[in-house]
Length: 78
Image (cartoon, rainbow, N blue to C red; front, side, top):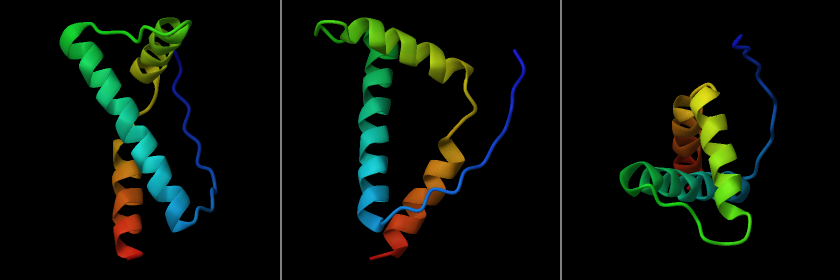
């Protein structure tokens, strides 16, 4: 698999950035719980969706640094 790198200009308000970070944090908790216990959501189609997202996460570039920087920006906005 060939890795490609792109950047995007995505203007966010402080509220939008905070919401994005909270959303990603919730997803990270779900992924962590899956790795720890093998848990998958029980709703209709949710387990299949989570499996697809787990595969995407394993093959994607890390978002750790950009999200850490976004978090620092949100905190600096007061």
